[in-house]
Structures are given as structure tokens and as C-alpha cells.
Length: 237
Image 1 (spheres, rainbow, N blue to C red):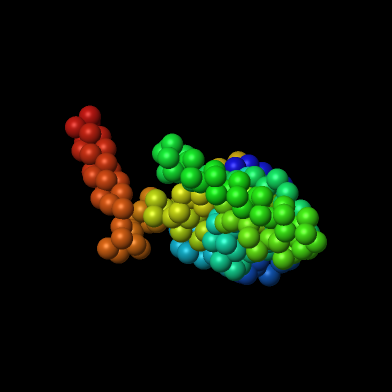
Image 2 (cartoon, helix red, strand yellow; image 1 turned 90 degrees about the vertical axis):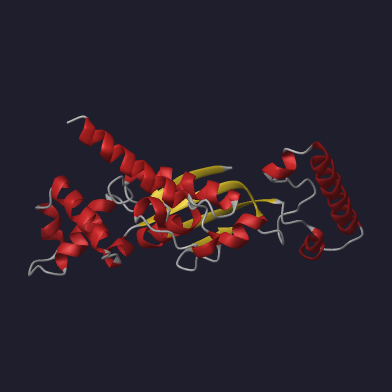
């Protein structure tokens, strides 16, 4: 999997802070930006995120180029509706030698790996035979597997990204999209560290779990660790 942050709103944290200040200022955005220090911007962004005032976060966006992922992943990804997507088309791109994303559980079992690889070879052969028979690739693609590798460009605003990270960084998320979410989070933290310093699964960020009976139990471990750290600090005084 390869994830690259291609484009993003310049000075995203200053943009968010300036947008928030404008709501309560008699002067315009340009004038506000001139007198807004980086420190003041960071302080205001932290306050906005802590209070849940996310509307101004929609003014900044981030565009990612994502490669080496499966159609399983992108079927989940496009369910996040507040985003823009441009995906490699199996209708126009010939798949005579498609790459395959192999799940770790399959790769870890030699027998499963052998069966998986054999099926992918059979599918590839069937696709190629259909194309050779004159079937257009837009119809031949019906035999292609969810495991077929794909590429996609994704643009999300900061508010949508925070929600995406809450859901997909969670250990309950499917392994591939969880891996993608953490890579995307690492990328945006490089350019907007304050904006995304509290991003991640709810157990880490908010101290709560929304999975109900399906919880992985990680929240209890996090609470126990915090209590232990607190006790160690008190003992060290």
C-alpha cells in the first residue's frame, strides 16, 4: 500500500482559525489573517476541536493518491460520502495482468495461500480468454475479484477526515482500511499537527467506545494504563 498526500489547503490551521475569528469580527478575513500569529492560531484550533465546533474545519481539504489497495477497501472507502473520489476504471483499463492484494490470514497459511493464488490465476485466465473472444473489458471485468489491486485519488475536508479516523483507525475496522487510515493520519499530521493531534479512534481520543458488545476491550486497557501512570507520578512526588 502506498499513500501520498498530493495537495492540501496552504496553512490549514491558520485558515481554520481565521475562519472561526471572522464569525465574531467586524473586519474582513484578509485583515484578520495579517494579525493572526501561529501561536494564536494553534490555540484557537485546539479550542475549536475540544469544543466540537467543526464547521470551520470544512474550509481546509487534503488530497491523497492511494495505490496498492484492493477493491474490498475502496468499496468501504466510498461509503464516506463527504469526499471526492477518482478511481482507476476497470471499464477502460485492461486487466490482463492484474495485481492481487492478499489478506494476511491467507498469506500466513500455506494451504490457503496456494488455493487463493490458484483461484486468482484461474480468474486471470478467464478474463484474458473473454477479451480474446471479443468481449469488451467493460463486460469481462465482471469476473474480476475483490482482491484486484486498484488506485484511487481521495479528497476530504478536515472534518470528514476526523470522522474517518474515528471509525477506521479503530481495531474493529477491517485490517486494510485501518492500515490506510493510519497512513493517511500520519501524512496529515506532518502538515497540520495541531489540527490532527487528537485524531484517531474514540477510545484514545474521547475515552469511550461506540462498539457496544462488539468492543475489542482496548478502552479498559487504556484506562488502566492511565491510572497506572497517574499512580506512578504521585509516587514520584
